[in-house]
Figure (cartoon, rainbow, N blue to C red):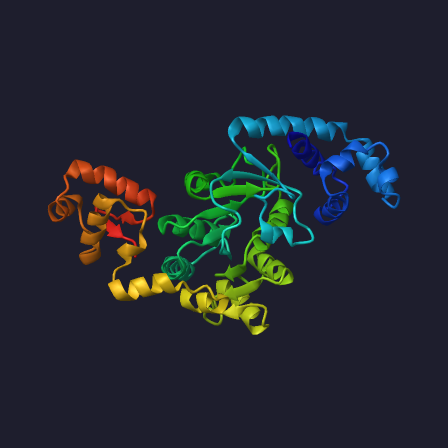
Length: 374
């Protein structure tokens, strides 16, 4: 198994091949081991293979050395190396003709979750865009329960989507345009650390790979391919979000967009996609859920019958539920009032509220008050 992984990693270092070409060769062989074991006589196995492949395999010793060093790093730091044939490989992505042969993953989220949606858009996210993301993710959790949120951890829409997923207790995965030994942009490091604990970071690139411009375009196909649907929140007339949306459409994924005011710079791309029937118009999470057929009847019935979102937080222990009950009746309370109304000491609450923040159930507001995220 380790040898197959090593060989697959080495194949990705053969720079002559784009992802589609490399995947085609890999699929024909059935595995990387067959290719690498016959790298000196590859035409005995594939008589019609190109001279480019013959030459690349004939000089792959450096690629093997680089793969060995990378695998040692990954084993040392707990990075999961996921090959195309592995069960952990995103099944949706496997359907795509240019899927990566190898992925590097640091996280705990299931890349084959029952429901996966990518949320993408401009790096110049406006207050309108942030509000749309906040309400969408919150209501999506209520309507569907467990949904994996995927984006690119870039400025603007991407990082806002990741943070709202964390705040609402949803797993979220960021697809990076560089190796897992670095993070771009560095200002998102705290968010990335939370994502590793509650979701994950995914890339096709080995360590020591810079965040080059071309890598961002290539990573968009992973964001699109591993998802059931794509949601474009805000975009100018040109932008990376539009690229991801079009790739999603090319992969036969459902594409949605929030409309914006005519003339607004960062709604122009969304409005154009809707006008051209590339994206379906939605105004809220319910529109999206109904279009996807993702209704979770048991959760909706529980919300309707009990009338309080605290029962949508099954991860809470008894004391945490007491705090949720108090905030469910009167939200945005300071710790001393919470102590009186819940019957818990201030010392107990300090620990409980920290854990509830990590679970995405409460948020501390300015002035030290706590807000229940519904």
